Length: 114
Image (cartoon, rainbow, N blue to C red; front, side):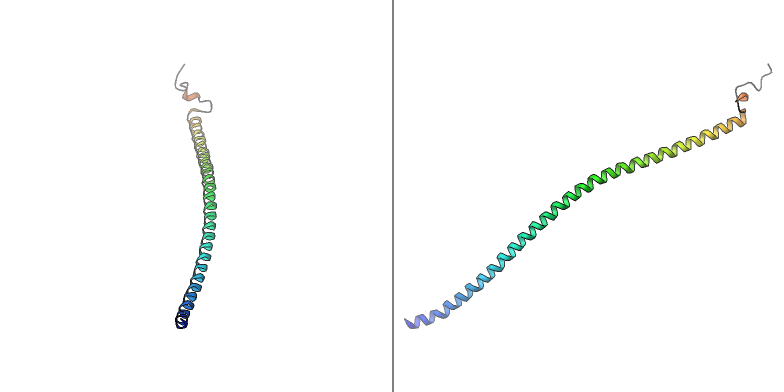
């Protein structure tokens, strides 16, 4: 029986060694899982922050687009008004040169012998 005990002791020591190694591996794995969970939590927080930032960007870009369109239309109206004013000045200048300041000759009074 003594001999059997001695044969078993190295096996028991080997099993204990393997069990100790297994505990270390499991401990490392648990720590890695905890770290992974923390990393996932941080990633979720970042993802939520990015989503909120994207919504703010979307709203601000819509406001900016409206502002830029209004500026564009305002500029177009100003240029159209200036072109209209220039055309009106040219027409008035031509009419006054051809018809006189009071437009007398364009009313049909200049050619009649009454």
